[in-house]
Structure formats: structure tokens, C-alpha cells
Length: 274
Image 1: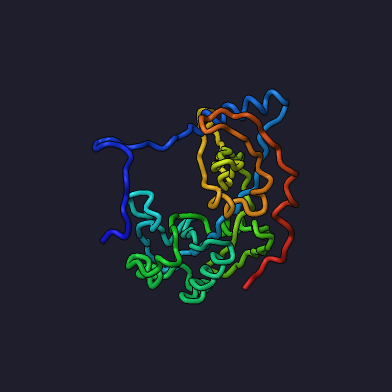
Image 2 (image 1 turned 90 degrees about the horizontal axis):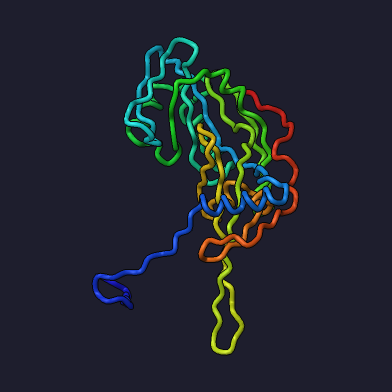
């Protein structure tokens, strides 16, 4: 049952279409503006996601489908050789959430001792880990992947701080890699509405974030990111991203380079071992 009426100003068979701008076209203008001023797009630290690494100690090859569903083929983790570990990405909106969920898995299945067990495999296949596990794939070398986990101090956009220390067990480890750096800029499109004899009130918006990368052929590629999502990616570094002002028709008028980024997100912490 409808709770309201939907009125359309167009006659039957017609509809309106949103104005869609090209991220590539916006980037070309921003790039040209940067080059004209002898500048380049700075890199912004992006929050890494937590990884849980488990060795296969079952003595048999384990097969399963990645819950991330990137491929129709199954993952196959051998019990012998140089690569006998499973890499898992943990669910959680924040690093602290992911850390707690990883610890839950370690405790529930005694992963530190058992590694990637048959019990864990069964629950993965039955969908019982859908609230904790985002991805599981492999194979990977346990020691080499575990050594890539580093201490991280991450500053959130609200000013709080999260300290993530790697945890190393006999057959499992979890933690994060150092923050990667991504080239991004924000596109701000000023738009205001005025009333009868009033000044215009600007629509409130954080704009749209555009990430810039380079493909294997050396071509620039752009990816739009909603500002609300980008804040979770870049934390306190969101406020250091350059801001381009553009018209609703996609013409870039100016580019503001923001204040220097806060201190590096990585510092020396004692690595936890159990």
C-alpha cells in the first residue's frame, strides 16, 4: 500500500534524467590546472582493512568459494608446500570492529592452535560466518603474509584514534598492512535556492570524491566515491584532500589545495605475540 502520492510533471511516456558528469573530464581539467601551477595531486593515506591469516593444518586440501564471490571458481588451499594459508578479510565498519570480529573468530575456533580447521570450513560453506567474514581466498605463504602486518595508529574523522597491533599465533595471525596512499580530489558543485525576496540558501553537500589511478597501459582512470563513504576510507585525512569547485555543467573553476596532512598514520608499537 502506498503511503503517498507521486506526481509527474511530464506527460505519459516521458521522464526526467539526472545530470551526470564525467569523472574523467573533471580530472582532465583539474590535472591541467595543477600542471599550469607547477603542482601535482598529493597522495592521501587510505585506511587499510584488517586481514586474518590461517594455516591449513588439516593434512588435506581444502576447497571453498570466496564469500566475496569475485569468481565462480573455488579456492583451493593445499596442506603441503610453501603456500598453505588462507587470507581472510573481516567485516566491520571501523578497524576496531574488524579487530573485534577477528578476535571472535580466533577464540571461537581456536585458530591460534588449529589454524583453518574443518569446523571453520564447514561453517564457511554453510554461510554461518556471513556476519563476520567478507572474503576468504588463497593459497598464500603464512609467514610471509604475517610479516606484512604492521602496527597502525589511525586517526578517525571525528578526531578519535584507533591503535591496531598485529596479533601472531602459532597457526594464525591478524592485523593490518601499512596505510596505502591514494590520489583523490573532491568536486564541490555550489548550488543555492532563494525564496521570495530572500538570499539564496546553499544546498548542504560534501561534494563527490574522485580517486585517480593509472592502469597497466599508463592511462588515467577515475572512480567516484560518495563523501560519506570516503570519510570512513580516509579518516582525519579527508580534510586534507584538494577541493575543485565546478559548475553543475562540469566546468572546473578553481582548485583549493588543503592544509598539510596530519602526522603519518604509522608509528612503532609493540607487536603482540601469543
